[in-house]
Length: 392
Image (tube, rainbow, N blue to C red; front, side):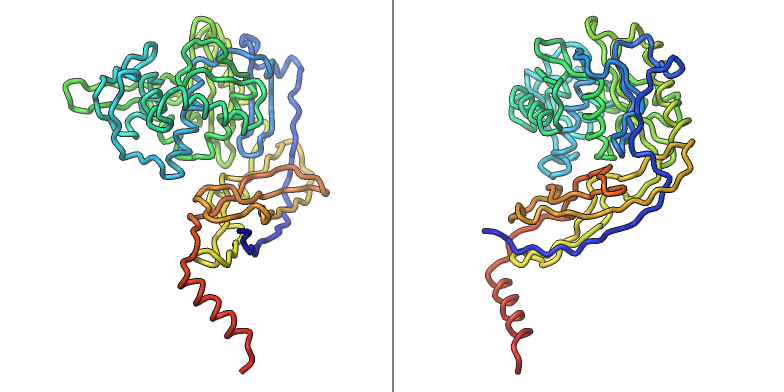
């Protein structure tokens, strides 16, 4: 049944020093990653590409694959189909994973939060498979969800064959696609609470206590870097998808195919330093800010808050001084809204435009789950409506 929808929204005029699009330069002075096969630098909030090199070349991602694995985990946590406190029994399949691992044992019980730490800090292949099986039933089905998400994000040069990044046929991505997956993951701001940890322990105080040390050493040495994920295989060489935040500006850098960790880390720092030296960001909305109200006549409550799905900022070139007016509008998908609506479901978008041209779009969510009203509530609502509109 089609729902009656009323939108109580807002349009805002913003005057900011704005640099909506930045073209990656091919000059020698900006050749920041000469020793990498591919690289990309991205402003997270606007999606603006600040630098790129061979960004569409298909390459093996190695353990940077786990950025997509973590994205699906965070989506499950957001939808409350998974909780950090839930305890998972480790399967034989998960325990048998090779490569980077935290040595989970078949039959062992571990919390979701500890498994997330094992992935985010120590790049545990076994922990990745354990959570993949919990979310999708099998790793194979989880990989299908990974590739469905790739399609949803509109990425044309990525395909996953497993949840860990172990070498496999038909398992590849690009610097561009890796940055876009990281951009999506960073909508879930709590992920950096885990990726920024330099060291921690699993089974603390037990006989089989395991020391977790972050494979991304830059989180220890840089005041700005707080994630995300390293990767290495003999074929992929050394890669790092990093994120850093300074003031209101968050960037994502991707380096793929470096010869060693030193070169990989040095190139990552050059990219991030370049971003913060040349650009700055001004925050317009925090994640979860109310931007409109949605009135649904057949829902439990008649009015629901419409909120932002992520932090929204506008990128500024430090060298540009012209003020340019921007307009912000709320557009809800009135024709497609039907009950029930899960918390976190996309019901519209926030659109920022300049001189009539759209320069930024971001999904909007309802702040809480929306269910059908019961018959008694609908009856009372109808009586109230009739009474209000009847002359006495």
